[in-house]
Amino acid sequence: MREIIELYRKVGGFQALHVAEAYDVLKEAVEAADVRFLSFTGNLVATGLREIIADAIRRRLFNVVVTTAGALDHDIAKSMGAVYAPGSFDLDDVDLAAKGYHRLGNVVIKKEEYGPLVEKFILAHCEKLWGKTLATYELAYLLGAELPEDSILGAAARARAKVFVPGIVDGAVGTALMTCNDLARTKRGGSRAFIDVLKDEEELREIVHNSKKLAALIVGGGISKHHVIWWAQFKGGLDYVVYISTAVEYDGSLSGARPREAISWGKVKPSAKSVFIFADATLVLPVLLKAL
Image (cartoon, rainbow, N blue to C red; front, side, top):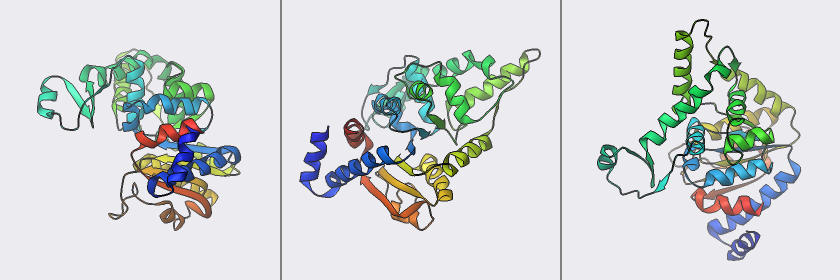
């Protein structure tokens, strides 16, 4: 893959050049930064990027993960045997719904292989959660210990990389946790599980405060992107950062905001090494991570 990086460098323009420059930034970041964030959105886990991300975590290229509830949903469903099939953006969604399928872009998922599988997994481990107050990184570790190493949560648990999910209730995992607590109420002496997101913030505060240099690879936008750069500001900003996104900045969205905008908020240092790759992550992330 390094040969591809060098080919992009010789292309010398547009996003090919940005990919080569991003490789340079990330290579230095892996060597120099003690805290290395990986942020990504759940939709990517519906693709084969799941295994590529898990491998990067297993190899300890990154030691702190911030993601969305959907990432946990897809990771668990696939670990439970769900088959995500290639489809088309142009499929008839009315027809798909009638036949019992979900569509995520051009990926097709059987309805019974998504929410029901996630719920089955969570409910199977309810008793381990009852009576506990857990941060999302602690929940992710407990769940990951029950999942295979080629899953994202499984790889993170084994590598001791903390996984933070600030929007934990925004998906099948969150709903299943609520059902888990419903079950606790039906059992004599059953004690609910509590998810304490402020405990996550306390841990992130310690990680950032004790860091020497901060780096981040941020894939996509939304809450997972913002949570990384939000905390980075309390250490003066990121020292290294690569964004990969297809969002534009002209509507004022955070998802499309360039690293330079984050400088004005103190979330990226003026001296930081940064690159914005305007591209589909499925095209560039395999090349970048394999090269690293």
